[in-house]
Image (cartoon, rainbow, N blue to C red; front, side, top):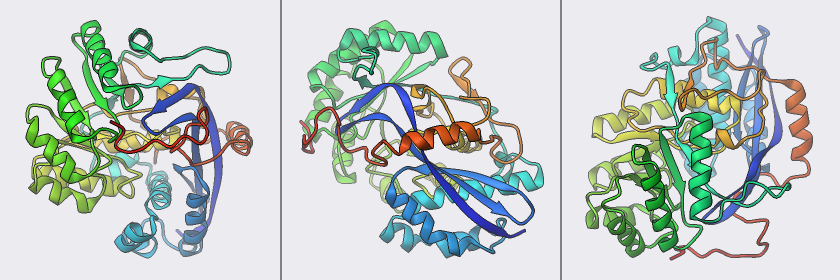
Length: 397
């Protein structure tokens, strides 16, 4: 089998209401849908982050893919995305989307799901966390979440609708004191749920330590990236050793894993098949964490259905996945896959059982959201369109 063509289509899907985080706001989610064609009539699907830089990566890698055998994954990886290319030129996101498509081709050709190609499943369904953001009101004036009461109400709606048993509370938007009190309100409202915090590395070490002390008695599942950098994370871990620390920002690449393990920087590494260079590489990172005694969770980057399927296959094959993965997926109003959005049942999502990734493109939806992408600013998350020109300093507090 040989690769004959690579195609990609930008798409923008609206969300229920604009999400806020420490350094910006998301009015919707931007992705690039990738299709890799073969001479045997099999087309593999991939997906990566949106933006002109990713499209440029794909354009540069396309001629290097033509004529290759999609089963020769390591040969192709070293041709397109050797470690130096990933580190120096930032090809990791574009390459990851292509790797999804190559695995999808392999699965379709062998009539096996991707999970079987990476070692097999240890679970058939994956629990996810309810991702709690402060939100602006949408165009209809609905969906705002800007204070403690609204956050609790928003959480109740999500739990009632989807059955989540874990809550991820996004921080760094309001003052630490307001967010401390909101966490306490969430804990009092949901005494049996796991609740985690994530300020996107917007706090100083002193602020992170103060928050940890204030919430010592409130059963924090973990504190994710309270500060920026491995040295700062290590200082937080030393000062408040009772709190579980997680990261996908200060620690997010293979070369971070060994110093992380040797220097007691964190307890949970949040893997992502996009950021680690594909499903197979993220699975390898999971094995490295297993060897070093580091638990594994999963980061979310606003996935559409193709990437969500990739996340599910990866999660199904990670024995040391000890915490519910994050997912922005419930914020989407639609998807570009046949059948529409995948469904949650009891806070969990079933791993697709069909060959390859187990999802197919809805061409009409793809064209619809491609047209919408042309009127949106693609690929930029580090801004807030409702506060133009605002510069958020780091650390924030």
